[in-house]
Length: 320
Ligand code: CO
Ligand code: CO
Image (cartoon, rainbow, N blue to C red; front, side, top):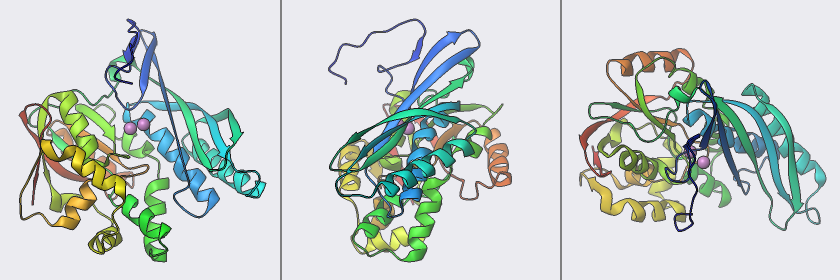
C-alpha cells in the first residue's frame, strides 16, 4: 500500500499513513468510527473453535485502538465441492458466539466458493476521539506489558504436523480464542501511551512497529515474557514456522540481542501469533495499577516484560 497515493482528510484520525491496527474516522467531536478486517485459513482442526479464534482475532484490532466493537460482518471462502456445509455452519456459529461475547452484533457478511477455506470478519467499533490508542506515543520510562503468552504459531505448526499434544492444542486454542476485551477495559483512565496487538509479525515485529511509530527504543527481558511451555519444547525440536524466520530476518537490523538469550526464547519472541495479546506502554506508577486490574479480571498471563529505555528510531534490545 505504501506505493499507492493515499488521501488524507481532517476527520481521518488514523489512516494508511500511520499503518496502525485499524482505521479511525471522526464522526463528531465525541465519536470516532474504528474499522478493521482480517481473515485466514484454518489453524486448528475444530471448525467451531476456528470460528471463535478468527472472530477474537478480528475483534482484537478494535481493542488495540482503545475502542469497543459494535458490529461485525462475516467473510467466508468455502470449498463447497469438497467440504460438508455443516463445517461452514460450525465456523460461523463459533464466530457469532465470540462476537456476542464481545457485546457486539453480527449484522451480515459475504461468502464465495473457493478451493481453499478461509474465514474472518470485518469489525466496526467506536472510540472517543481523544481516547484513541495508537502505536505512536510510547515515552521513555514507560513499562511494557504483554497480556497473553507467546507460542501459538509454533503450536499451530506442530498441530499441522500432527506432533502437538492434546494439552498443547487446548492451551493454544484457549489463548487464541480469548478476547482482548478484559485487557482493553483494564486500560480505562490510566496513563497508557501506546498499544498494539501481537499477531503475524510476532512480539519483535509488532514491538518494532510500536517503537518506530513512537520514535523510541525498547528493552525486552526474554526471561520475563510469558510463553507457552509446549511451544518452547517444540521450538527446541525445530518446529518453527517459516513466517517466524521471516519475522526474525525482517527485525534483525533493528535488534540488539544479549548472546546469553537462548535460541528457543528468540524463536518465541518472533513467533507469528494469531489473536495474540495486547502490548501496552504505560507510564509508572500506573503499570502497577494496570497489572492488578488485569489479574483481577482474570488476564492471568499478563506480565511486565520491559521498558521504553531511550528515544530513537525503533531499535529493540533483548536482554536475558
Ligand atoms: Co493489530
Ligand atoms: Co490487523
